[in-house]
Image (cartoon, rainbow, N blue to C red; front, top):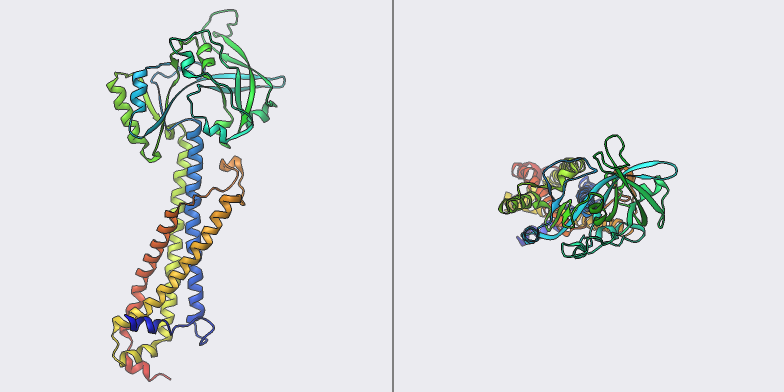
Length: 433
């Protein structure tokens, strides 16, 4: 093997030597492999960044799994789920569940001097994981929410709920509401009771105070939801203190959603809670996750094309090297070198070109990923892409897997042109002037 390495290190030079085609083509091969690696790493990193950002936004606003009532009612009057400490503890103890929280929603209309705007009021309690709202807070602060224990069965049911709300930047811009403004909201009750009966139903009004403004760049969320106290929904719906809209479960592994869903369903069966159902976040936002799945096919196409570019470049470089060095191959054969030994010489030289291209590509792509994640140089239209900049996932495994797969594919592709060496005859090549 020392013989092959020695020879490989001393011929087949770059463009500055000899004036042949192998030198410039070697440079082109290295550049092509580097470019292919950069494109593949960036494509996968950006795709994973998109998927991670959008999934985190959707999950951060809601949850991975939702346990709610089977019965479907209009948005203004959802059917409640009665809190069960035993069921809640069992759901919380499921392997893979990291947090359990409660919520309730109710449809309403915000009325200002200029217009009326439909919203969904999302009632939360202090046990809610609010880290997502802290990250996406644009102005002000989060509303004060009551602790769950403050409105349990043993507490005073007349505790006044918080009237502070968190609105989106979209709603703020459309209605001209700022932090500290009063927001008059009307909630449709249904039924035909009271002096407020209108077209077979009633309404109740609430005067909220805007405590903060958030922005997720997700129209499905920003155009609809106002965040407030769960106690407000309970009061509006005349629910008991233990009635909520449902449970939300946050899990550790997003890829295990379906498995976790079935585990939750089995647990509901054990508790004889056939009135409850379990839905995943993908079922709540099917169009959004379908779009992300569509991106996977585009990335697959890019990976295939770039792999072909890399293999064609290195195979072309190796073939030109073999053609230009045919006389040297003949001399080596005349001196006793066998075909396998000569093939190893050329493969060693081509392997060096492959490793150089991969190393350059990894350095360039790593630099680009770092710059984009640090300074967010490339911006996006938030209305179209649900985020204001191109996200990148700088997972080291992406760099490692693409490097290894590119090297393996290119090396396998070299076997075909290397086989041509066995057809070179020393008697014919040595006599060539």
